[in-house]
Structures are given as structure tokens and as C-alpha cells.
Image (cartoon, rainbow, N blue to C red; front, side, top):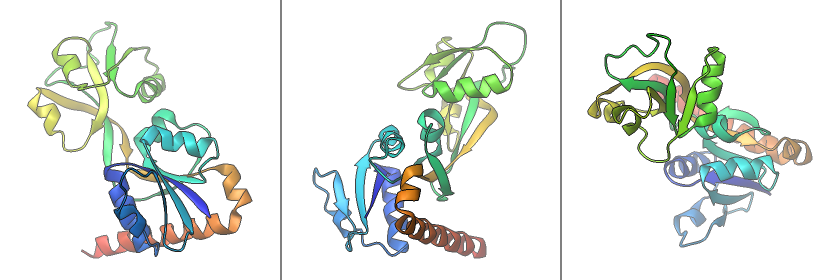
Amino acid sequence: MIRLALTKGRIEQDAIKLLEKAGYDCTDLYEKGRRLLFYTGNKELEIVLAKAADVVTYVEHGVCDAGITGEDTIMEHGKRLYEVLDLGFGKCRFALAGIKGKNFYDGYSHKVIASKYPNVTKNYFNGKGMNVEIVKIEGSVELAPVLKLADAIVDIVETGSTLKENGLEVYEEVAPISTRLVVNTASVKLKRGEMNEFIDRLTDTVAKADKAEKKD
């Protein structure tokens, strides 16, 4: 049996649809109650519902063989796991954004960046050779430039409507994001047959979905 950690919420719903298309009976997940552990009909998979960051932790520590979570969580928290497949849903992007019409790179002043993702932000600016001050925000990060707490923000952007409504705009894209399948490296070796079959079934399902989307 493969133990799969699944991010609760929007990713959970799309992942269940994907698993069902791949031939797994997910009936147990439609009658959840307060349970957090579930099984597919034939018990090929044991499914653990968890918060996104915990999915990464469970896979890294080997208590789960695989996980489905967003690339944003992997970039911020993931260290010792293997990313094997882009599942093709939950698409958005990390972006650097700030007050509309302002040139972020203008002048030589010390730059302050607000973000819920300090590691992503740090790595991005390190890649540019820039030393910036990072302020972690847990709530509405869009407020930081408006209140002059920060020069800009690094955050997930889907449509950009929230930025626009608050007088902000995207300065540049940091990285594209989508939902990914990650696996524990030891599990790939110890459960080679089961893991390979699981990965192959999801890979084939994603490929068929991509092909159908291109036809439309």
C-alpha cells in the first residue's frame, strides 16, 4: 500500500478527480466527517489529508510515500524530497509587485520586501545579487506597500484583480506555480513496483488530459 499525503482544500478536490480518472476509487473521501485518514476502494492507497506544509514534512520524513501539493509550498519548505510530476492544475505564479507606476529598481535605497514566503523571496533576490530586508506577513500582504511598510511584495498571483483593487501592479514574474506530485526517495526504492505503477498511472492520466485540452 502507498500512503499519499494530500493537501486539503482546492488541491484536494482537483487531486481526487485526477485519482479517479487514474482508476482509483475515492468514494471514502466523499464521506469524510472529521476523519483525516482514508482508503481507496481496493486499498491500493492510504490517503492522509493535511495542510500544505505538512504534506512536504510527511514526505520528507518518510511517513508518507508520496504527496500532492503546490509548487509554492515545495519552493518555500521542501528540501529532501523528489518532485516527479507536474499535475497540470492549480496554475498561478509568484510575482514581485508594488505600487502602480513606481520603478522598483530606481535609486540605491535599501529595499524592503513583504511576503508570506520569505525563503522564496530570499532565493529570488539572492539570484539577482541583491541584499534585501524581508518582512514576513501572515495576512493580506497587499497592505504592506500601501501602508509603506515595504517597497514591494512577493506573493502568489492568479488574476491580479486583488493587486489592481489595491493600487498595485506586477513588476515581474518570479516563478510559475502548479500542483506537483512529490515522493520520498527511500519509498521509491523500497516500494519500487507499487510506486512505479502509481506514478505511471498518474503520468498517463495527466498526458491524456493535456492531449484532450489541446484538441479543444
